[in-house]
Image (cartoon, one colour):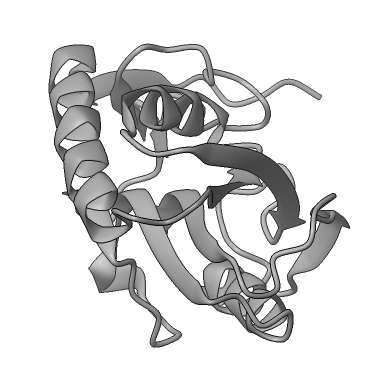
Length: 179
């Protein structure tokens, strides 16, 4: 069974993303100034491009780790059941931790991940999200830093996918299904 044809309309250009990543990195570097090593935790899979660009701009010693959580599968809607598919390799107790998320939508995934990480007693736990859809929030969770606040559109690109496609686009685009 084939996928329904769709069009991608550019919402946020690659140039705008690069400029915002630099600005976010400056703010994060100032916030965590003096830390001996910041543990940057990327939430897979959607954050992989964002985290790569962000850590290269940070003016801090960093350790990178990944956690994979899923509540979407191949769907455009959250199942609200969050599963941890890959856990951290390193310990975070007593350490400064920055969680890097591609998009905060309903908030279920991020809220679940933060609850798990808090039980591991990090010194500080902050969140940087590339995209935020506040109109879709169902759980009260907020990122410390947000790249862009966007309307309720399904988006792809810059690491974000639709059924494992379009992650490689250099921009953020809205998925549209022609009539």
